[in-house]
Length: 457
Ligand code: IMP
Ligand code: MG
Image 1 (cartoon, rainbow, N blue to C red):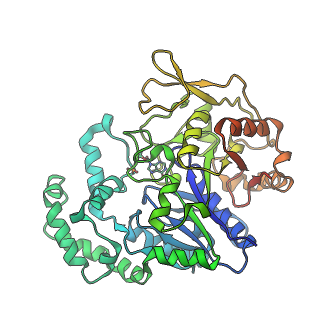
Image 2 (spheres, rainbow, N blue to C red; image 1 turned 60 degrees about the vertical axis):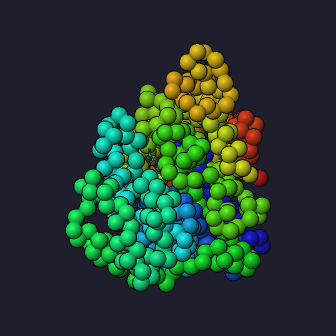
Image 3 (cartoon, rainbow, N blue to C red; image 1 turned 45 degrees about the vertical axis):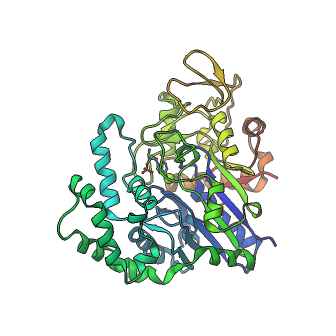
């Protein structure tokens, strides 16, 4: 019996499969630490995140459930908590809780930090307006969930709206004050109109009623979980390459998403936790922005189609590249990773897989550090290629629910036989990856559903 204290963070540009792994971790935590509660905490970002989790319904059929605000523990009946650094859209959150209740009778405990900032309708509208202003070329291609404008307001004393104020009687008075501060900007963007304040207040009516009782002094409540021996799983949104300071500037998101950043905000001790970096075997990226190993040829395009690489939030087609060990090595360092889990190994079957181990600058110089400016940087690959074949079967994996039945047997066989039963080239890939990146891979995910991860001793 052991308390499970883990933090999951993406090592690339998001969509590495954290949602699925946390969903699995909840199950594991329950088995390893029976009789205890499990809470999953979201600590940054907002509805720009999209976690797709495949869960089996009563008939054993795979159904897709997407969350944007809630941590993925929702799909598993775990308790869920929203930390103070989140860009919190309470209306979207209340809807997710509601559909969790309807779909699978969710009845976990919900905790929201009283300090968390509220993301309002005008943040989304300003986000959209900024992008229209900057024109196609300069536009980051944000998720238009208001994340950038939110964090700007949240950092400013006069425009920050905390969950505590939002849930209290002071809400309308505070919002009136904030709108006065923001009026020039809202007018310029064509957002302001005479009844705007009243409409905003009405929009929040229902969510305030349902969520007010869940507002907590979170740092103390989470500490109680720790001290009772309960399980705590911390869930990062996005991926290291999108971090506001350490990502690929200027095409990054607006939050501090590195795993160590969560601890001070939650009042939890880093030393008690295992930080797990989640790495998709090939990187992907939505929107504009550098990805040094991007492939716009057969490799990248076929993966997009076969693996269904379209955004959970924006539905945009993702861009895909070859494995970039150099980038991942830096991400693992920044996040202070204790271990790595590699996901989607099934999607790279029967292909020549090459791994980037250095970058070449425009002047021909080769470097083994990730520079700030990635313009013109070209990947240098390990000479050796890898090719693995896990099973013969349908290659089009874009609709996991359809191919699930055919492949489930193969997947379960690997899961039960363990890491050593995987194809030799995949094992070699993992070993060489680990010696380059400097962190040990503890699991390889070979399917989209819960329980389809092969663990390594
Ligand atoms: P924002 O976070 O909406 O401001 O978007 C900034 C950039 O980060 C855009 O290129 C987005 O597509 C990207 N991004 C934001 N959140 C995610 C995510 O959860 N997964 C993948 N990309 C994301
Ligand atoms: Mg996502």
